[in-house]
Image (cartoon, rainbow, N blue to C red; front, side, top):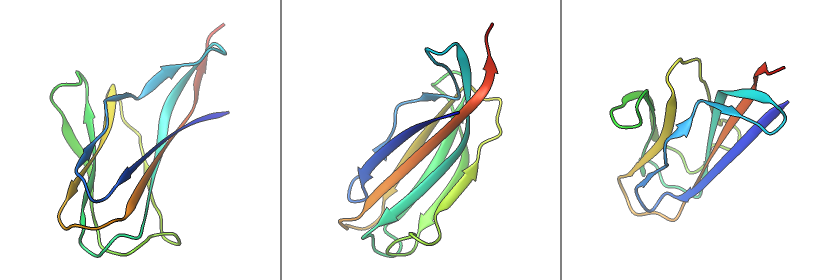
Length: 118
């Protein structure tokens, strides 16, 4: 069983998500752990900006976990999929715009059952 969280935003603006817990509880008495992140974009221009994944234990200070410069119009046939194997408590997605463009970026966070409570 898995949970999906999808974040969509324009590549024409800087963006920063809220802090997202790496571990989360479901109403079905299970604890989910973030396992992977998929990043897609379309209608962008080469070198339009950088996308980064940041980790934190306190949702205040953070470390960069991953950074990528968008360098193609789209990545439909070459999506970025990042394996998340961390003990950090929180994660967030940031995007820094470099050039004006009208593209769209989609980030899909996939969590899977980590533990079932009895």
